[in-house]
Length: 485
Image (cartoon, rainbow, N blue to C red; front, side, top):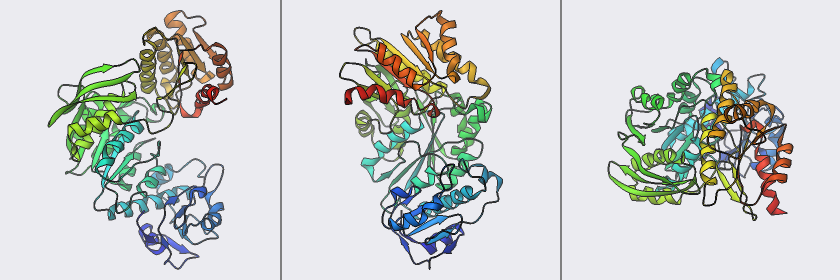
């Protein structure tokens, strides 16, 4: 973060000084985890479901923090944020915020981030949203832009009202590119994040069924995702997926210049001649208005072609050449954990850990990747270990049923469904293919691990995927722990 005194921070957010004269200077990072505080930093006292950051204020200052951003007086130099009465602002607070203090701290944090971003004249803010693929696309954009100047992007999926401003506050006077991921649980959320760090370039990847239970329909999801392009300035750029009709239609909702990406022939940045190798890695010719170049991705899954095109369009807008982009895309690697993380054990078993999160679109993409990887040379036996896909509302049963049926159609050898919440996957597989033991429903992670340890054979390939709440990465971790023993 840029250097600011506690007085300047208080003025920026409309807060009050407490146990401080205001001359204290923040020179370090802004942290909401007291264990991550560094000398000169600012500690954010967030109330939570299990712990309250206010209880750690004194410890954070002892560890080197200059001060604390807090909702109430603490035993440390602090800026006390103003109370929040706006219903919408209160609605986006974190779990456990029973008195609105969490919403107040988030609002203060957002106001501080906006102050910092507004002072960074040389930075270009890039916003990325979509139902799936946001994190992978954000990671690709950052890798393409870093050679062009200092680039800040969030680790993993720091894309909500806490992670978004926290990431923006990582930027300083040297930052040239600030790449941010924007998520939403309801209307107005993306617009609010845009107000924290106004983007000049906005990328919308797709509109799927993630959070369908909260929004009600894909059209409602599209309306919310489109808040990003509505917030772009007239001299900005909206990068839209030409292959997704709901995204392409957002062109009429923005004052910014529109760049379409995809496989469609009318896309300005597109992929032609796509080929998928035995490890499900894509190669293609990148076609742009200023030239073409060959790309060979190191990422697993054909779905990364669309992510790569979106990243390419952003880099092109910021001065990269097609050859630059192709070279960087070909050298790009997975950055965020548990997203198509492919590891092969000493015995030849390949584990595809895509367990960070799941929705119907991302599970379909992962199953297709698994099927491709299993067809290499002498066919490998394929296992799909799948758990519940959350937040699907009334479509939950049909969505899980369709995934089970798809596993049969893709000729996946074994389906292991973990947890009763995903039972419809197991039932769908049986109805589609009259399966017997090819599909099994197990109650929990331990049962899944026991089954796999008993039946996996050298050369098998295993996909592990579910919504975050299922914590199915424990299956992948257990399978890979074999090599560590």
